[in-house]
Length: 89
Ligand SMILES: [Zn+2]
Image (cartoon, rainbow, N blue to C red; front, side, top):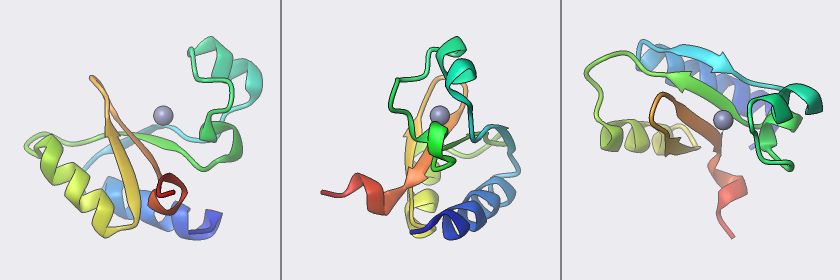
């Protein structure tokens, strides 16, 4: 999945879950300020954070993300998305 395909998938995820994108690409300083990991994919625009709308379980969100080619890490207050193809060895 290239950057353009990732962007389309993030938009589909956000719309499908009636959510809001709260973070996407970050510069190194801002990534550090939010305690992002040093090699975060947010630095390369290949990670996005979405706060989903109400009523979607974590499992449903993970399955929906996978159907779009996204890896979904469910955090306490948002879903962190990356291209699934980058997570599979
Ligand atoms: Zn994130």
